[in-house]
Length: 303
Image (cartoon, rainbow, N blue to C red; front, side, top):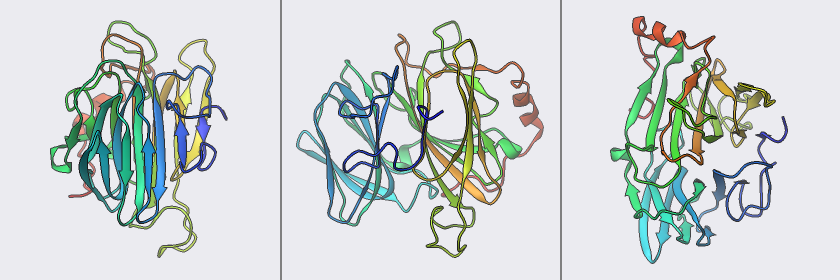
């Protein structure tokens, strides 16, 4: 399981809290080749840089505001208080461009990446432009920010979105897969980067909130869809990463009392940039039950 699950700190490199699958990462994951993720926590006035490379990138503020510079042009990313306060501005940098990210007041920022050859223009997507989808119903209700999906962003390879699951709910459900190129399915690697919080507020890790020693957590499940072995049931917290190379994945479970966020980065070798999935046939019927249920009234987060 260790090669697919990276608790906070185990995928760190230099100034990066997470550095997996990117062109400059020294942490090799056998067989991993289509997606990457970097996450940094920056103090006020600090900066991080990514050299020009044959990969496309999207800059996602997780907390705080940032300025991203690409080819001499500066883009102000207004950001947000935290990932549970609604969408943030994001920046698609295109392919083959160096990127510098600075912050006046400090914060945490993620950069999703994918090896790419076709160039698309740099694009600043404001929070107001991001499609917000409420998916599922009942205790399968969740909120999706579709800023890097094919309908929302012109890009070469990757598909990027973020999901917020209220405390006690399940998402990435029913379990599904996208590990074959065939009719109705595309082959896509997937990265899950997680953050958590006490449902009424708080940081999710440590004791710097009103809930004393509360330790917000959730779970992620991945299991085999064919002869390739994989069996993950991971307890996840803020800063943890789970890689999905293949197989059925889901549910992502928000434990009662704790909200769950994850950033998804997907890409693959197929000709079509599309998220086409197959449900686990044992559980796909669950989608039909949503028609008779109300959406969780706690959604949407961020108003």
